[in-house]
Length: 282
Image 1 (cartoon, rainbow, N blue to C red):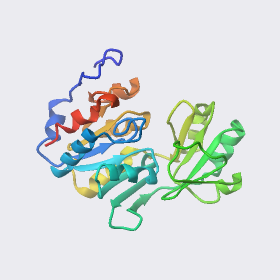
Image 2 (cartoon, one colour; image 1 turned 120 degrees about the vertical axis):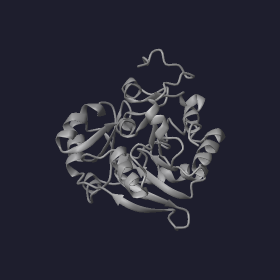
Image 3 (tube, rainbow, N blue to C red; image 1 turned 90 degrees about the horizontal axis):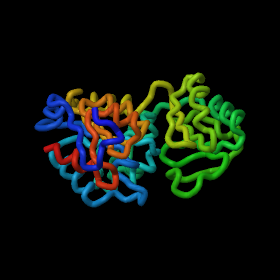
Image 4 (cartoon, one colour; image 1 turned 135 degrees about the horizontal axis):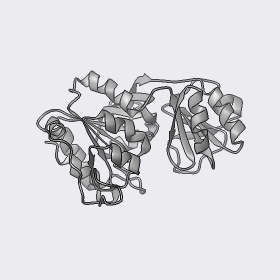
């Protein structure tokens, strides 16, 4: 396996031949992470990536956007890519939706998992009194104890008291602040999925959910063979989907754990590494 320290932007670690055969000459389910895979810091999908995604879709493959973002954060990206009809995995697998530009909302929820967020909020606030909390309201935004800075979350925000944060079950809770990663194990002991999304950020979703669990649901729905699955991502929250896919690809700038888990390593976001992978699908 190529060492992360020696993997360069132009160096592609190739998948086993069987995985390559499975993803060419047949309809493939192509799961694409968004931030760090399709989008750089400017929030715009490069034209070369838009073209590659459109070509893959024209060839009959199923492109599924799979993100830690909320659904309202995924829809504009689908629009940039020209995806008017398709599937999306939001909130790290807690939400499965159909993108449908013909609907007033632009989408239809196919499956949403939710959980009682009160124990999570209470634990986080007791351990880190200054922690920033966002409770997702699917399709709208977040109930928050303190407003997140522009660009950090998608959709609207409404500041509320702690008791209103947990007034209803939710698909996801965001915890942000210094020391947030120290909450990972205590949160997991509550029976939830806690995923680091940065040095000061933890996403909390219902137990045993990931992008992979949602993608498997979609795979079964569209009738794609397990061997005809491809996933590309760059974050820790992509680990499960990269190992789920018959052909799991890590972006070149991904952390070591993601690089090690992948069948292939492509170029980093700065070199539009996802395009090299998509170009193999015809």
